[in-house]
Amino acid sequence: MHTSSETKSDRVIEVNDLAKEYRVYDKPEGLWASVRGLFHRKNRIIHAVRGVDLSVGRGEFLAMLGPNGAGKTTFLKLLSGIITPTRGTARVLGHVPWDRADDFRRRFALVMGQKNQLWWDLPAAESFRLHQEIYRIDPIRFAKIRDELVDMLGVSHLLGQPVRELSLGERMKLELIAALLHEPEVLFLDEPTIGLDVVAQHTIHEFLRHIQKQQSVTVVLTTHYMKDVAALCERVVVVTHGSILYDGSLEQIVDRFTTHKVVTLDLENPPAAGEMERFGFSCEVHGPRVSLRIDRSRIADVLPKL
Image (cartoon, rainbow, N blue to C red; front, side, top):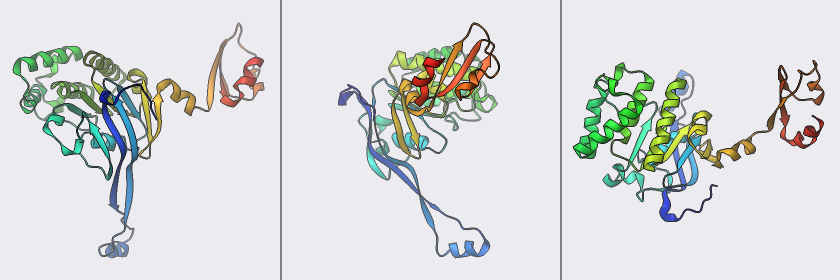
């Protein structure tokens, strides 16, 4: 569990024993089995989130790392109040998310990489104006924030195009702008770089780093890309099957979950064929540079012999 010196008042997000279960119909195969299922339905329980405990401090950039189906998106839906839990408690900015208080909804934003908040057939500029009305943003303040964000991402030429005509990377940049127009204190990002090319990913990484540092926004990012984590976050929560497997620093995660270390040697001359294999572990030879994959338990014995 992550520990820090932050006081309770510094915690923007507090979660205790939070769980979400879904009851789904287990459809049998075959015609007669389907007919019987009309009268005697067999259900099973899916545990999307299993008793999670978590706290996030003000201005922190937290990554939730895990495979598809690990429960990351469900967790963000709980924290943003889209769904209610089966059990447990959560407070975000002092509010119970699923109470959906107006004050709470004005203070956070949620961006989902596979869902649009922008109107598909309208130019982004029109969706931005709609956000201004919804969040009751002062017109002068709105124009200032919009122009700053648009300039940072270099998308002024895209504002008049219908969203459906834009590339995935262009849409994601505009989605982020829309989410930040009302200056949220908490930003939830669900797979924001999914499907993007390397250049678009880098641009979004740079933008998020700048925004988080400049505005001290508390950010919770879900991803299964290690690149996102390495580029943006110091604290990582590893999630699997709805449970937290690890909560700590990015540096410590490597030591905890890797069984091998890679040792690189720069030799004066390329090694003779088969010379390195005598140690009994795999290696890659590129001229005088040799990379050895060594079991962590053997490091102390092997290094003196190299």
